[in-house]
Length: 230
Image 1 (cartoon, one colour):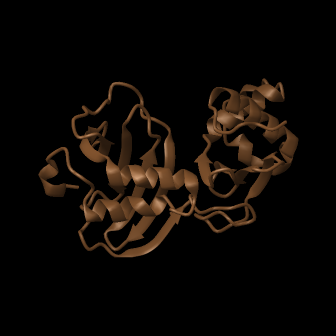
Image 2 (cartoon, rainbow, N blue to C red; image 1 turned 180 degrees about the vertical axis):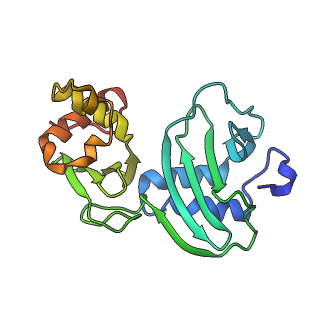
């Protein structure tokens, strides 16, 4: 993005703040924490993908790009006059936080870019349509007692996310991982079904809410997101 010749460390520019901050609503505790991190940490260097991919930390930190990227915490898409811009915030781990801002058309993002539409899961709540395609989603209750937790499946976009009432965060859930757990739980061994994760979305009637709930519970044992109430 060519910000300030990318001299590090430095704070987020106004443009970078505008591209990222809307993913983190300050009226939800989980997102508010990350919003505060963006305001207090500084960009200390590039991430794994170079320009537009930055790592934030304390000014004297050295960016750690030795391992795989941390899981995405919040993401979204901005449709602007400059093109379609994808933005994401990764999980804060070991004092560092990675953010990404990419124009899918490969163009630079102007300082005075005009927003046409913004879409993200960060504001979603149960009972609301998919924030990207505006179509109804399937909701599977994971935790009934408060604070509740609801798994959402969008059959139009083939996306899955988990709403956690305790902090208001919508966690992206990899559909491939959930599908794997579903195949194991259902004892399905047919390679045509096992190797095609989109079977999770092909026919909603193939799997009951209980099937999907148990598959998520098994997934959560490895990739912890919430405390499960059984």
